[in-house]
Length: 84
Image 1 (cartoon, rainbow, N blue to C red):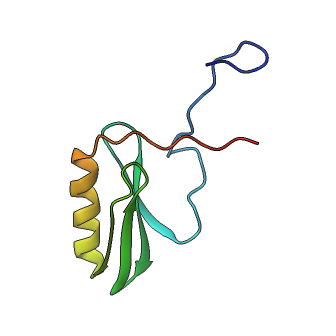
Image 2 (cartoon, one colour):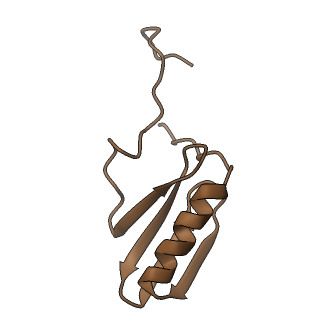
C-alpha cells in the first residue's frame, strides 16, 4: 500500500508512537500487536490489541506475567488504524 506520492505506508511502531493514557507497560506480540497493561497496585488490567483478550482483578505482578505470556503466543494481527 502506498500514499498519494507513491511512498510505502508505514505501520505504526510501538516504539515510536505515544502510548495511550493510562498504559503502564506494553508487550509486543509475535506479529506486531500489543498487549497493554493499565492501572497500578491491585487495580490492574491487560488488553490485547490484536485478539481483544482482556483480564483484570489480578495484582500488578501477575498481570505483567499474563500479558507477557500472552504476547509470546498471540498471532492475532494488529487492528488497522482508522483513517478519516
